[in-house]
Amino acid sequence: MFESVFDSLKKVTETTLRMQQEMYEKWVSLRPGVSPAQAMFTETAQKFQKGWTEFYEETLKKQRDTLEAQFKAGLKNIEDAFRLAEAKDPEELRAKTTELWQKVFETLRQSSEAQLRDLQTFTGRWTELATKGAA
Image 1 (cartoon, rainbow, N blue to C red):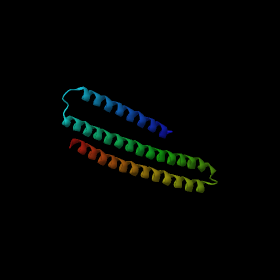
Image 2: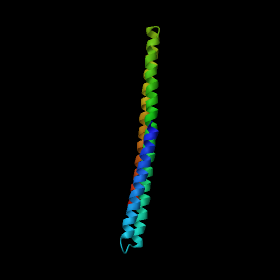
Image 3: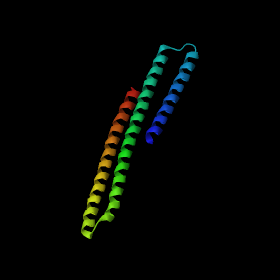
Image 4: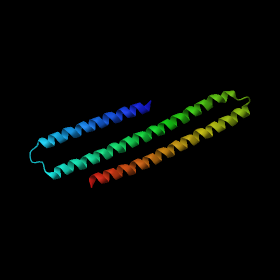
Protein backbone atom coordinates (compact mmCIF):
# COMPACT_ATOMS: atom_id res chain seq x y z
CA MET A 1 0.00 0.00 0.00
CA PHE A 2 2.71 2.47 0.98
CA GLU A 3 4.82 1.42 -2.01
CA SER A 4 2.38 2.88 -4.54
CA VAL A 5 2.04 6.11 -2.55
CA PHE A 6 5.80 6.59 -2.37
CA ASP A 7 6.24 5.73 -6.05
CA SER A 8 3.59 8.28 -7.01
CA LEU A 9 5.19 10.90 -4.76
CA LYS A 10 8.59 10.17 -6.31
CA LYS A 11 7.22 10.50 -9.86
CA VAL A 12 5.44 13.76 -9.08
CA THR A 13 8.56 15.18 -7.43
CA GLU A 14 10.78 14.18 -10.35
CA THR A 15 8.36 15.63 -12.89
CA THR A 16 8.06 18.89 -10.97
CA LEU A 17 11.82 19.14 -10.64
CA ARG A 18 12.33 18.48 -14.35
CA MET A 19 9.74 21.13 -15.28
CA GLN A 20 11.38 23.70 -13.01
CA GLN A 21 14.79 22.97 -14.49
CA GLU A 22 13.49 23.28 -18.05
CA MET A 23 11.71 26.57 -17.28
CA TYR A 24 14.82 27.96 -15.60
CA GLU A 25 17.02 26.94 -18.53
CA LYS A 26 14.59 28.60 -20.96
CA TRP A 27 14.53 31.81 -18.95
CA VAL A 28 18.32 31.88 -18.67
CA SER A 29 18.78 31.20 -22.39
CA LEU A 30 16.42 34.07 -23.27
CA ARG A 31 18.46 36.52 -21.24
CA PRO A 32 21.17 38.18 -23.32
CA GLY A 33 24.76 37.97 -22.12
CA VAL A 34 24.55 34.87 -19.93
CA SER A 35 28.07 34.08 -18.81
CA PRO A 36 29.63 30.59 -18.51
CA ALA A 37 29.94 31.16 -14.76
CA GLN A 38 26.18 31.43 -14.52
CA ALA A 39 25.79 28.21 -16.52
CA MET A 40 28.22 26.50 -14.12
CA PHE A 41 26.18 27.78 -11.17
CA THR A 42 23.07 26.26 -12.75
CA GLU A 43 24.78 22.87 -13.06
CA THR A 44 25.98 23.04 -9.44
CA ALA A 45 22.49 23.94 -8.24
CA GLN A 46 21.02 21.04 -10.21
CA LYS A 47 23.52 18.58 -8.69
CA PHE A 48 22.78 19.94 -5.23
CA GLN A 49 19.04 19.64 -5.81
CA LYS A 50 19.43 16.08 -7.12
CA GLY A 51 21.48 15.13 -4.05
CA TRP A 52 18.76 16.41 -1.73
CA THR A 53 16.07 14.61 -3.72
CA GLU A 54 17.95 11.30 -3.46
CA PHE A 55 18.58 11.91 0.24
CA TYR A 56 14.89 12.46 1.00
CA GLU A 57 13.88 9.50 -1.13
CA GLU A 58 16.26 7.20 0.79
CA THR A 59 15.09 8.63 4.10
CA LEU A 60 11.41 8.08 3.29
CA LYS A 61 12.06 4.50 2.16
CA LYS A 62 13.97 3.78 5.37
CA GLN A 63 11.16 5.25 7.48
CA ARG A 64 8.60 3.17 5.59
CA ASP A 65 10.62 -0.01 6.19
CA THR A 66 10.93 0.80 9.89
CA LEU A 67 7.21 1.50 10.24
CA GLU A 68 6.31 -1.71 8.43
CA ALA A 69 8.57 -3.74 10.75
CA GLN A 70 7.03 -2.08 13.82
CA PHE A 71 3.52 -2.69 12.50
CA LYS A 72 4.22 -6.38 11.84
CA ALA A 73 5.74 -6.82 15.30
CA GLY A 74 2.74 -5.08 16.87
CA LEU A 75 0.30 -7.33 15.04
CA LYS A 76 2.23 -10.40 16.17
CA ASN A 77 2.12 -9.20 19.78
CA ILE A 78 -1.62 -8.57 19.55
CA GLU A 79 -2.16 -12.07 18.19
CA ASP A 80 -0.09 -13.47 21.05
CA ALA A 81 -2.12 -11.43 23.54
CA PHE A 82 -5.34 -13.00 22.27
CA ARG A 83 -3.80 -16.44 22.76
CA LEU A 84 -3.49 -15.73 26.49
CA ALA A 85 -7.15 -16.74 26.82
CA GLU A 86 -6.14 -20.28 25.87
CA ALA A 87 -4.31 -20.73 29.18
CA LYS A 88 -5.63 -23.67 31.21
CA ASP A 89 -4.60 -22.57 34.69
CA PRO A 90 -3.36 -19.41 36.44
CA GLU A 91 0.27 -20.60 36.42
CA GLU A 92 0.25 -21.06 32.64
CA LEU A 93 -1.44 -17.66 32.25
CA ARG A 94 1.26 -16.04 34.40
CA ALA A 95 4.05 -17.70 32.38
CA LYS A 96 2.53 -16.73 29.02
CA THR A 97 1.85 -13.18 30.21
CA THR A 98 5.43 -12.80 31.40
CA GLU A 99 6.76 -14.16 28.11
CA LEU A 100 4.53 -11.79 26.11
CA TRP A 101 5.58 -8.87 28.27
CA GLN A 102 9.26 -9.64 27.64
CA LYS A 103 8.66 -9.93 23.89
CA VAL A 104 6.80 -6.61 23.81
CA PHE A 105 9.60 -4.82 25.66
CA GLU A 106 12.23 -6.43 23.42
CA THR A 107 10.32 -5.26 20.34
CA LEU A 108 10.10 -1.77 21.82
CA ARG A 109 13.84 -1.76 22.55
CA GLN A 110 14.69 -2.92 19.03
CA SER A 111 12.47 -0.33 17.38
CA SER A 112 13.90 2.45 19.57
CA GLU A 113 17.45 1.41 18.67
CA ALA A 114 16.55 1.28 14.97
CA GLN A 115 15.03 4.76 15.14
CA LEU A 116 18.14 6.09 16.89
CA ARG A 117 20.42 4.54 14.24
CA ASP A 118 18.24 6.01 11.49
CA LEU A 119 18.40 9.43 13.15
CA GLN A 120 22.20 9.23 13.36
CA THR A 121 22.43 8.21 9.71
CA PHE A 122 19.98 10.94 8.70
CA THR A 123 21.90 13.60 10.63
CA GLY A 124 25.23 12.51 9.16
CA ARG A 125 23.94 12.52 5.60
CA TRP A 126 22.12 15.82 6.12
CA THR A 127 25.29 17.43 7.47
CA GLU A 128 27.30 16.02 4.57
CA LEU A 129 24.86 17.39 1.99
CA ALA A 130 24.62 20.77 3.71
CA THR A 131 28.41 21.04 3.89
CA LYS A 132 28.88 20.04 0.25
CA GLY A 133 26.19 22.50 -0.82
CA ALA A 134 27.80 25.34 1.11
CA ALA A 135 31.23 24.64 -0.37
